[in-house]
Image (cartoon, rainbow, N blue to C red; front, side):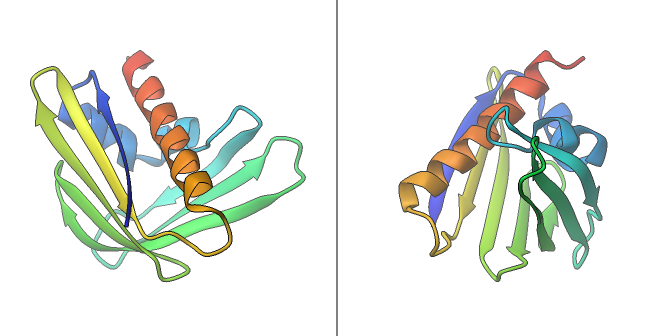
Amino acid sequence: MLTVTTIINSPINKVWEYWTKAEHIKNWNFASEDWCCPNAENNLVVGGEFHYLMSAKDNSFSFDFWGTYQNIELEKQLDMVLGDGRKVSVTFQEIENGTEVIEKFEPESQNSIELQKSGWQMILDNFKKYTEISA
């Protein structure tokens, strides 16, 4: 399992909402400025699916990043299985000055471990930035 983490200077209820609501996901779920997430659907129930359209802004490439929820603990943890069978776990922990978010994910075999960890960390950093600057 690979791990990425961040500390967000926002209360856990806001962090959870911004992580799970489709209208917010579209604003942060991409690794760099030349990508976007034009559509997000999130059925936040055990057995429910999420679908995030990941798209290059120049329309040269896009894909559906999707998975199924295996476990949901409100404002604490999400466990998912991605469409390709890999497992992902996201934990949310209230700390003194905000919320710590820890993402653990099984790597895929196409890209280097470093590239995968870097990409997931960039998305998590985008999430932190969006959550902290949004009202």
